[in-house]
Image (cartoon, rainbow, N blue to C red; front, side, top):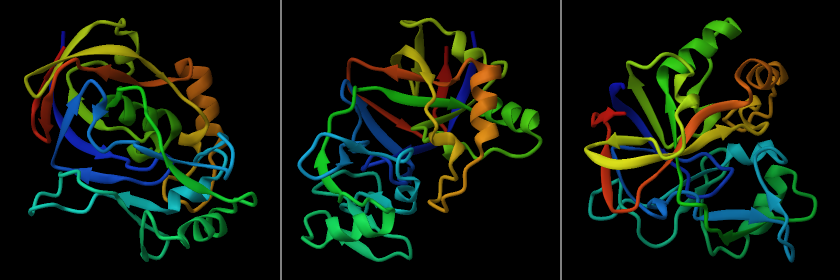
Length: 233
């Protein structure tokens, strides 16, 4: 058993790009509203372009325009921001060429809708701190691209042992653990698109943590979660 609170929330409108910090978010069986609803592919194919294959992609940001003064709203299409801050509409005909140029996609890059798996990634602050201690320096939580950062009275890395189906409450709403998150190479790249890789970090996660970091959770109903909400499991 553990208790805690939500410390930070993020969503990533376009897979592989940096996302936006939130005050609150709506979550249902499809996952967090506005999260990972678009992705990049090589034009004319289903081959995904992602941060591991094109780490400069993380130099781009994606955010949903605020609606009615609510920064957490999701309406219309997200706005994309290239390195340096220039804004792009999703349907701008010049966007594919600019994306390809800035992320070194020699075969081009096209944005298209995707459907993720209704899962939401939760990372525990104690595990992030312990990983930093083991690595001899702070590890940025943004490397793991979580939706939720939780501060809880749970031992570091203990969340990876939570069995699928284990109930967990976020903001008073019922969720269940789907599975521990098996990590790809993405956390080894700097999360700002600067294209610097820490291969030893990836090796450490594989060797010492069984390549698991964070957990996926799901909910069957509608829930609203917010920074500061209680967490229990």
